[in-house]
Length: 348
Image 1: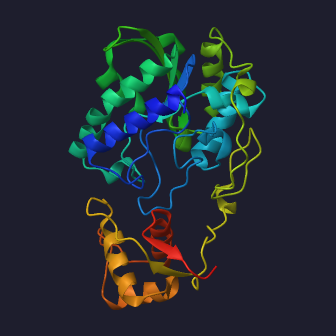
Image 2: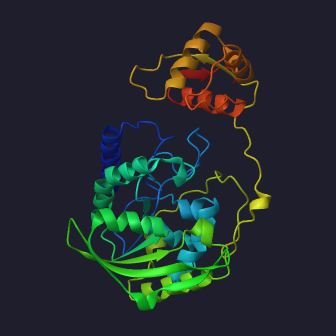
Image 3: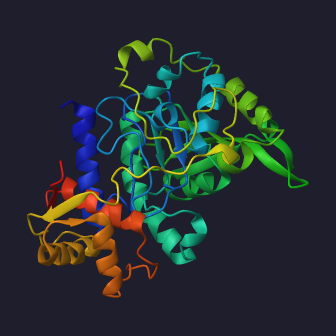
């Protein structure tokens, strides 16, 4: 295990203790391996549903140099991959593996509106020290911020001073109104007093398909030109085998993904797949439904996912969120039980 992975595991463990979140359905810190880099990318927060249907290039700590913006193809990855390649003047996407990516806070939700204002602020405040540690580890000279919300969070909690470079602001049309697509700030970090360049683009998932988006990418490239390029990093970073975890078609580099062509997720376990209970989940296992499912599975004996789903519905069981228990959620939780050693598949 190298220093980066040791650091990432330790930070993850400390965040779990501080937040009380021990299941990655509910948080995500890393989107790549951490390493020294002149450039770092920071978004607002993790997206994806909290029912386990989110997809990441690595379920652990990116030990194989997996990278969300290289290996995955959800909307923001499909937009940022070509944008970063253009901005950094590189032609091989594997070179992006040495551009670390994270967020201003780590609690997962589909949209920022899913959090009450006080909860949103508390999340940002709680995660700021951990984000500061990651920045100190990477030591970037420039930080690309995905969205003005990410900039606001970063400036408020990590910067001692900020000077806006007004001449660099790029505006464009969005929904018939003039909106900021790019801005540049010179900031001094609170903890280290280091000066970093903040390059903020309109949130890629909202601005990436608009006609003026290329202006923001051009501004990124113009401002990153003085930094050391990422050339050679592809050879230094081992290239993992392709991971077929995308929830949609692969978009050619430089082209936005066609959202209308996204295929439904395919179940990784058929309804007839049979599981049986093995080891009882420990009392401190944080995801309560697993305890309920294990209890019922231990009573029923070897049972298919479909039958287990019908059984839980017959009991009137509902998810902690109040949402109905769908077959797909049941499937995901049964697979998760097997992964943690609480159940095992018995139909070969």
